[in-house]
Amino acid sequence: MTSCPITEQINKDALEPLLQHYGISTTWIDVVDNAWIALWFALHTANTAGPNNKFIHFDRRELSGAESFGYIILIRTDASDKRSKKKGFILGTKTETVDLREATPSVFLRPHAQHGLLFRECGVGQRETGQASRKPDYSSHICGIIRFDLSNAISWLGEGQLHLVRSIFPPPYFDPGYQILLGARLSDRGIVCIQSVGA
Image 1 (cartoon, rainbow, N blue to C red):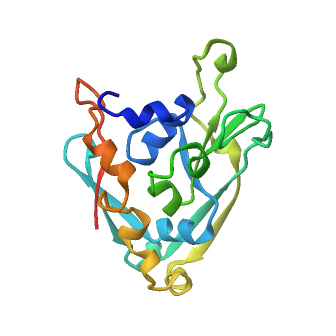
Image 2 (image 1 turned 90 degrees about the horizontal axis):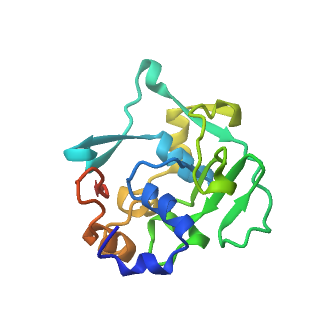
Image 3 (image 1 turned 90 degrees about the vertical axis):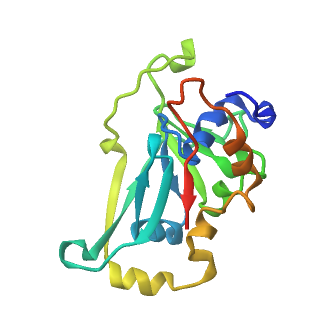
């Protein structure tokens, strides 16, 4: 990443999960620690367009037939060691979790709006070499699945201002970190880009 001085203030281990939160594909998996945010994502579909799926738009799901249910997947990690010297990181023997609300500067508003956590398995050889290979199947971390009727979820979530797309994905005008990332050059080859979220 070039032309982005704020990255010098971020722990280098938190940079990859931060970029994931703003649309770059990485080895991390987005999770949340808030039931209302989980419900919001279960009630919406993401539609993408443009090069590298740069443009993303969220629509409320339609209630119909097989699509009348939503699901929340419960994830278990062994990341319970808070002795990590890296702020916002919780390490385990098999997994690592990062809380972007702690690990990155507060100018990045989206992680706060979405209760942004990310987790992944510790890669084989990661701690010894800095390089890691990870198995692609994380199904062993699923400890439960909650199925619910979407019509109930709509009622539970309500229609408040905090549940608008612009609240869950604050636009660059309100999210200075997002504005900075949109202006940064991420790749000379143009193979990655920060997603532009439409309301």
